[in-house]
Length: 201
Image (cartoon, rainbow, N blue to C red):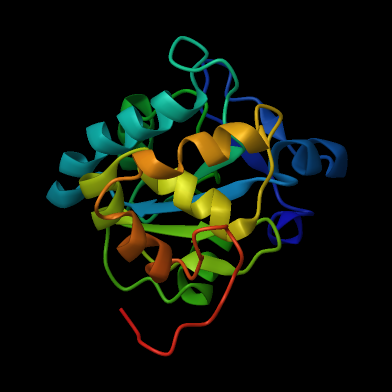
């Protein structure tokens, strides 16, 4: 997945809009993480409606005020806006830890074509190896919130610093009723191993 943005420039959505453009910076922000590509446009009503949901989702997984260890997750906004002014308006509403591509970067359109994005908003979720985990996670984020990340994490077999095996076993009986369905969707078993079910959801 790091290869997706090597030799590219990612911009931090902070006050200074710092650019990450060295190989070391790109690897540092993307390696061993689940990557969400958020395709949207400021003039899209659905995108504006989804934005607070996505911000809350991201904040609860990354903000130390909510959790002890920020999750191994990176969110990149891929603007499909018609003008830089539109993109800037949208960025002002996005979480400050989100990364984005500059408006004049043609790679925005290349990513749209690569992941066959036809409509917005779309959230493409990628495993650390760059394979697609979910071609569009918008509905799942709206329905399941932060539980989505746990399922993505298990499917990607991503281990984080706070992982403890005995806690995983203790929590097995505390799963929600929708967990088996989501596990099948992301092609994981109860134990987090990838398999290939014969039925499609």
